[in-house]
Image 1 (cartoon, each protein chain N blue to C red):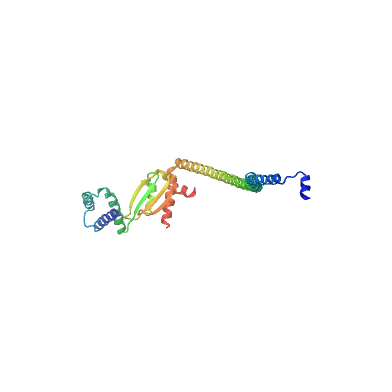
Image 2: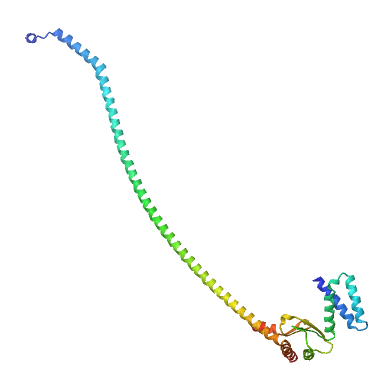
Length: 167
Length: 125
């Protein structure tokens, strides 16, 4: 009954079996020569893709790190440059003060020198006037003496003798 | 320094000899000068003789007085100056026109009285 039923569907057991064996053989061959290598290839490809993604991720992380470092460096450079500018400004101010002080000192020194020179010249002029006056007085006295030298000599000698005799 | 001592020594010896008055002064001085020349000391002979004279005068209690004036001393001025000269004093006269007028009196080369017009002007001016 059962065979009859199968035969009604046109199934030939022998053919069916042989085809099944063929199918299994083909399945084994395909599995061994196609499926496994393709699966292996796909696995490797997946692995490579994963590696690439990992590396990309790592590169991204690195890039972020580099970016952060760069930003930090830029900030540091900004701070350094600001400090340098401030320092330079302070130095410039200090130099300015120093130059101002030197200039003032120099002016004071020059003023003192001028005053000293003026004083010295005044003293020299006074000395010269005094010297000339003394010379004039001397010349006048000499001229006076030359009018009556013997009389003046006698008077002075008399006075000298008196002073010596009186001790 | 040694030469100065030698000069003083010669002068002292000469003064000692002359002070004894037993010999002719002129002869002694002449012989002494000859001695100085022989000793190679002729260039200092004047110095020795001057010093000997000073020592001799000092020994005899007499003075050497130098009158330094601008012009030659006149007779009337000499009379005035005689009042300060003692008997036996050796008087020397020296003319120095730079004194202008008056007199500078030097006694025994050490004591000095400046009565010259130059000195007075120096003290005043």
